[in-house]
Length: 125
Image (cartoon, rainbow, N blue to C red; front, side, top):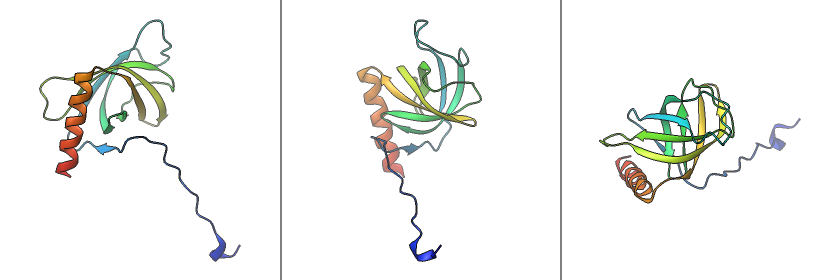
């Protein structure tokens, strides 16, 4: 095949929010959202937030979760003294020792705190 005619694959970005790399250790714990919803993975676990946006995050963890699992999250953002709670998050993908979640439901005060953190982290970059 002629090298000039090779077409590189096009990547379509489906994310609604830009991701912010979390430079410091950002701890997270999770538990099943509710007994009525499906949760096939570990009952609860811990991990590190690897990147973060207003709509979700990438989590590094050796916990066994599956796509579609519903969970509640507690995130301790760097520099914060109290944790940020996500009432409902859904596992959207998983690979090796990481998985991504979408934040489905969280309180207004929690959303504001997350947005303020992300704004300050973006300024610091």
